[in-house]
Image 1 (cartoon, rainbow, N blue to C red):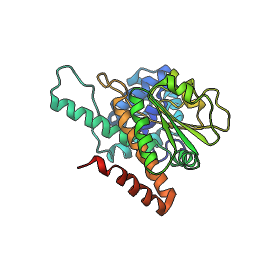
Image 2 (image 1 turned 135 degrees about the vertical axis):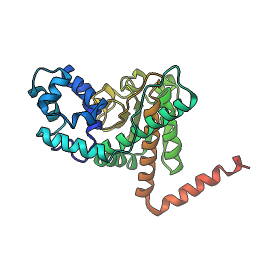
Image 3 (image 1 turned 60 degrees about the horizontal axis):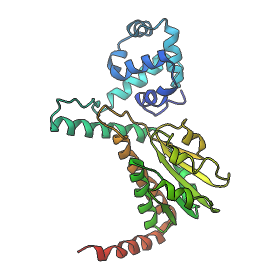
Image 4 (image 1 turned 180 degrees about the vertical axis):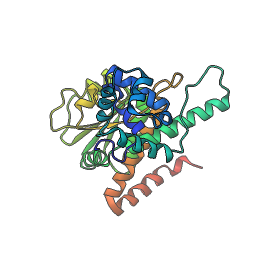
Length: 285
């Protein structure tokens, strides 16, 4: 096993879901809903229960996830379930009380944070840090709820001395960014990865201008244009519009990058943070 090693099987199913065949999606959805039941089944029983044609269909499914055998797949799943203390999340219903909503929103956030903690690869995070650390200017692009993430990153990176640019107006950005500068790094945020106002300014950038993306789909147009793609996995529910839960993960990702940059700057970053704090002191009573 390669892809699934030390990574949640349930998270792997969610990550690979969009690229699976219709039958593989059916298998994956069954496992996500009833992982404990799967542990009690032989491969033939699982195929019969789901209603797929043959055992070979199950074989192809677990190989997509990086497992070489059904036994290995079940042992890994059993270990995961045994060590999993996180409750599953559920759709919000129109009859839910405020207590129900509180529990479901918090549980969804906890689950999504846990999944992304396991799925985010240190090498990819390091790649993003390399680009940001060596940049001469960081361009933050994001609109709507993604704009909140871009503004958060703008504020954090500016605190430690980085030359950052952010504007919530796509028309102003079209003009301001029409002449890219040497050392520019674009950090682009779009949950779908298909937002036109994010993609248009970067699709014809010179090759020496680097692009970091934060998106929900690494195979989206934005993901493919990026030098480093930070994919956020989430399962948005019926009332959770505009990538509500994944927004929490993206804020956490900003914090990871911010702290990583602080550590790379070394002891001098403390002076920058202190100066930033003092510059805001007059606004506080």
